[in-house]
Image (cartoon, rainbow, N blue to C red; front, side):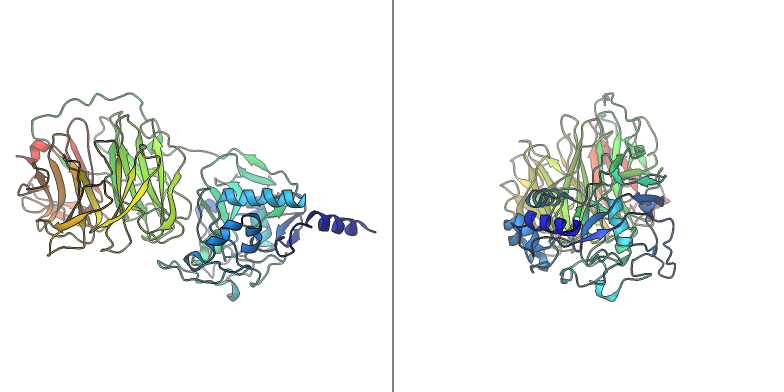
Length: 623
């Protein structure tokens, strides 16, 4: 009896408790050396597939020992032997209903738990592949964008484009063209969790690398159905929050005794987090003199290599205890793009101009539509953001972070409403109610008449609950009235040709709506509704003349006639984004813009639009 027979008998004994259908079929991957990543364009210039910057520098990697990798992604029937209750998720969103389809809706922790379980059942050592093992096994000796060459094989194509409504496709494994190692599904089908934290590549050769020693996101590889082909290349990298679950991420396993070395990834803090003073500012009292300052740009090109595009959108702003102002916004080529980043900038205490922007928040290769900022009474800053499962901004999870040091450092991002679905497009302007409840408005869908959903937190932003109610108008602003009711205005869903106004007596679980006295607003416009610290409610919206501010001194029963946001002097100003250049004079103000607002303790109202920062006070509005 030779060594092979001994090995086969041991395997059969170890796996006796597992049906053959539940045991992953493994293929042997020989040791070797390859060039990991890419530089500039892939070798296939005919396709025009451009490498992402996170694929550089291309560097030599040695896989020192034989290891074994599952021939396909782990399937439903294999995973459900470990976790039977997962069967309830079969067919969710129209995906992965069959026994032999790749399992989806599994987090990184779920994948690790499966590896531990199957290791204990078989007496063998299974784990997730490292990112280097994954790319080495995928390439199987090739250097082209795909192991099939310059383009994907036809049997790999599963609607390889960004879709608002995902097109259901079969995720059955083992049907596509295998690579030279006999592996299936390495290009597409579903993304696959890897063992590594996501981080910058080293710039020198490596042996059995295991990725950075720490991080925020775990690497996923291979791309997915309903994803452009460029994200399915051998070198392409993506990542996700470890607790994320979607119909686009599954996993496969390796069997190996290789212990991969982690490395300390080079870390460079973004400018927005550098040299942040921790000295508490003395704001002073509001002045009774009218204050107006000329608008200045807050959307500033980045100091780092963060993407910066002409489309800068959905800003948010807050004040910091140290006297700084902090603003964030998304920057992107296309609103449905995976390249979307959230940039940030500071107007530091005493400064006359906003500093250069830098990266504020980004989950690699995920759409990041919708952000908000809120400063709590103890100085904690809460940041909420939408994070998509892919490129389109319809399916978002709600993610929260916080900072206790004026935005110098941030807690790890936590998914607080994890379903990638509608009702999670964050809108700037969360509020703190008199009883401490935090309220966050989110667009209830991607359409202009989808309305606004209401989300509550009773623990200073750590956890959130969707009330289930939807009010007319997207991009809604909300305030608490003195009698405890909520009042909200939104864009779209006009009532009798007017902007809708809504009221709730139960913290947003039910609402009544009616026509307000204000004209509706439309594309490229977002209002602000804010309780000023002096008492009145301020509505910043748009009229025929442009940006107009209305005040109510009787809890929304009546409003002042409105004041254009202009000092009357004539000039042309660049409004950015969809606004473009506009004329400001005595009868014209900015005609479009996505408003966000903060009022600092000294009474100054800081209103930002899609590019500009306006500063004034209540007394200027009243004169």
